[in-house]
Image 1 (cartoon, rainbow, N blue to C red):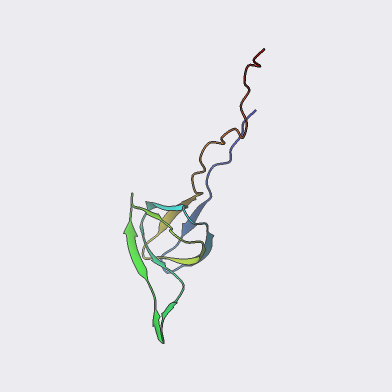
Image 2 (image 1 turned 60 degrees about the vertical axis):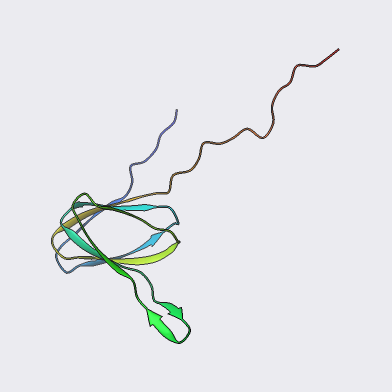
Length: 100
């Protein structure tokens, strides 16, 4: 039997922030409300850069790198974190008919 659990969902009140660990390739879906996603600080030389993105209902963002992100609710919000898609397992060997 193949059972898969549904992706995790969170409800956030306006002003609440969730700090979430994400894998590369995972997706954040905004099911209700508006959010601001904040990535960790990155350094370019001696300059600190912080990337943010605002998203509303129906928008999906894909994370290119693994790490922790802060998701802040700009309104009452429901979000869903979908794990990265894994390709179907490929067999490592094949059966061949023996030749006589």
